[in-house]
Each structure stands twice: as structure tokens, then as C-alpha cells.
Image 1 (cartoon, helix red, strand yellow):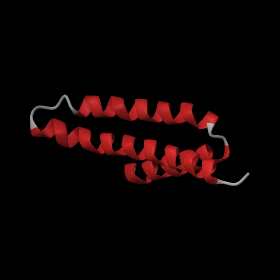
Image 2 (tube, one colour):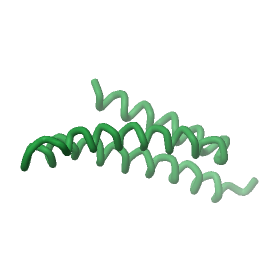
Image 3 (cartoon, rainbow, N blue to C red):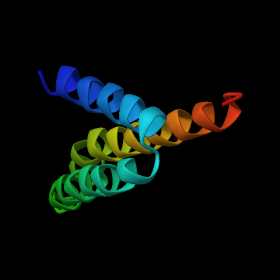
Image 4 (cartoon, rainbow, N blue to C red):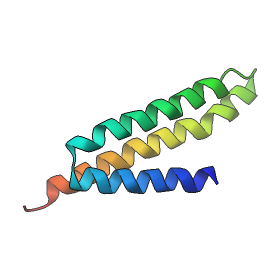
Length: 80
């Protein structure tokens, strides 16, 4: 279920970044901040469990950043 939510957020951010690039930065940062909180909370588990619990949040944060930047980059390549 979380995977579907992250995919939906990435799609929304990519579309938002394509149509209104300046306004897409704040939702992107907010989403990354929220995922960072989850990563830090998961990282407090001892040993290997800390890395295992924080990894999904870190990779989701990277995906959110990539989708936003891809939308802005695509907008920059458009001829209008």
C-alpha cells in the first residue's frame, strides 16, 4: 500500500513540476522532509535492522527528488 502511495506522489510531483515548476519545489521538499523523518525513525533500530528499516524511506525520498527534477527538466526541453 505504501508503494502505491509513493508512486502516486511521484506522478503528481512530476506533473506538477512539468506544468508549474516553481510551485513544485515546496511540495517536493515537504515530501522529502516527511520521508526523512521516517528514515531517521527507522534508523534508530539497533544494528542491521536500522539500515533495513530506513532504506525504503531513503529510496522513496530519492524517487521523489528524481521525479520532480525530471518534470522540470522535461519542461526545460519543450520549445515553448
